[in-house]
Amino acid sequence: MKRWQLAIGIIISAFFLWLALRGLQLDAVWKALQLGNYWWLVPSVGVYFLAVWARTWRWHYMLRPLKVISLGRLFPVVVIGYMGNNVYPFRAGEVLRSYVLRRREGVAMSASLATVIVERVFDGLVMLMFVFAALPLAPLPSDNLRRIVIMASIVFFGALLLFFALAAMPERALRFTEIVVNAFLPYRLRQPLLNMAHQFLEGLESLRSFRDVLMIFATSVVIWLLETVKYWFVMQAFPFEVGFFALMLMNGVVNLATTLPSAPGYVGTFDAPGIAVLQLYGVRGAVATAYTLVLHAALWLPITLLGIYYMIREGMGWSDFGRATEMRQGEAVS
Image 1 (cartoon, rainbow, N blue to C red):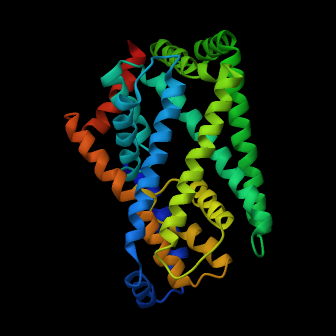
Image 2 (cartoon, rainbow, N blue to C red; image 1 turned 180 degrees about the vertical axis):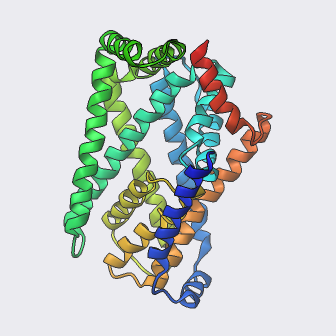
């Protein structure tokens, strides 16, 4: 990871942490943490891994045009990828996930990365749908938040339309890419980039079928509803209650915020928006902070530990993050 990228992430996380903690009495947050009934974390973790299994099924469905891989073989790959997202900034786990898939199943990294990017677009659209559904019921809805949501919607819908166009016309897309590459790039870079473009377009093949698109979207909705159920279970551990739509709003806002660069584990970018949404519903700052911190830990720790276990079982080490990038570059050249 380049130092300037890490520095940017740390600065953004520090800013969001300042937003989250300013004006709070930390001793009150500590008391709220001590009052938590943490037995509720057990079902919350179970529901979360059910959502991870649903993510695995979605990726299995998207990878079928490239290679049919069983859910049992794919689940550890997904877990390793999400572990990588938790311990490295800039969602480096997505590249790691494609690298592990390349090692285990021989699927080209550029092709599998295309499916991962499409996943992220569908996730973003579902998050925006959650926010749109919950905002009319939110107390004192923010005009600024509405404008941000509308702008984000334009970005995600625009990206999805672009992917649909590329999937529908792969030959034209390749010809256009070849023209641009030959016109503007040095000779030594042309073939690697064209190879990557070809593999990337192969990864978009699932978007050529309306049935496949419908299945991907429906699975994405199920995944994020299950994650919102996790938010509900963790809420039972604390002395406050908000409606399910409020938790959908929180889920949508915090996950859109975590698309920003940040320090490893989405420090700050997850916490500040979550606390702000709960305070919008009248939850005291100390309780909202305690809940958000515990929720963040419950989302981060179990899959990170399981990912490390699967990583060790694969005979991998931290140096494989660097090898993932090298393999992707070498794959394009070959």
